[in-house]
Length: 328
Image (cartoon, rainbow, N blue to C red; front, side):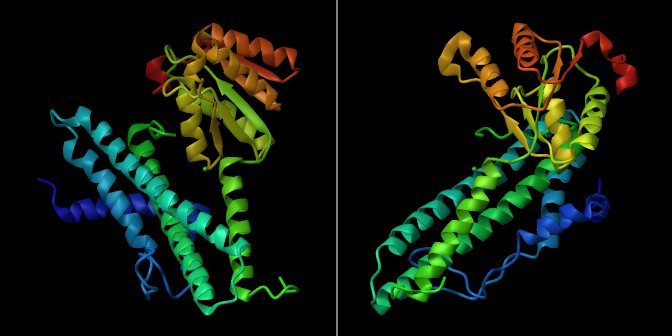
């Protein structure tokens, strides 16, 4: 039986590989920075001096949790279930981050209401400052959880070759305004700006769409995307949101290359029109380039719309792939 020490050694090896990507490591560590010496964890609890987790230890915990599932079940009759179990673990990070985000939004809403309704009392000032501290604390926790989720998703991608996809789917006072009130407004403004950047990534959009069946040569898809990124470093990837095939390969590439990806999933409420309405929205985003791979009439319709709009288009057919054995 494999010992705990060997698991730790394996985790260290994986961490060493991840740490080669210094910019990613710096970004990860930055999510665990404490904006204040004090933290407030709930509306009821008072401020307390409590630290964030050590980012390296958090990274190790993620590596151990996800990696060990694959190590323990490999070459056993339960190996086929390793991917589902690991996916569930990554998704738990995602859902917990969303719970923290909900609490953060509630605190931010209260903070906004207080900042708009000035009260010169000391009680008001104290409550305003504590509400801001609560919002900041929850924001820090949410960012750390998202960093852990993203790292877990990266481990999942390395182990399975597939991207993780979640189930659900973001002042100088001139009028007697107190200093703490000004800080609240500043905080809300910066928070809103940050969140807009997360949910509305800016940059030239590259569309990728392809069928779900018959596609295996991820090397060909990745090579095309590498070539596009070399010409357009600040690109944003837009896909048609399929969970396997070409779209999944493109999303895996985006995760591996730290490229923002936007998934245009059809609105099922529109019935048979859903995919075609989605195609229209994609073209209306004014992409600068597109890769469309053989699939169904949906891909043919998208290619036609892109040509009509004058978008430079790369077409690939299933027959253009290398054999499955060579591609592997």
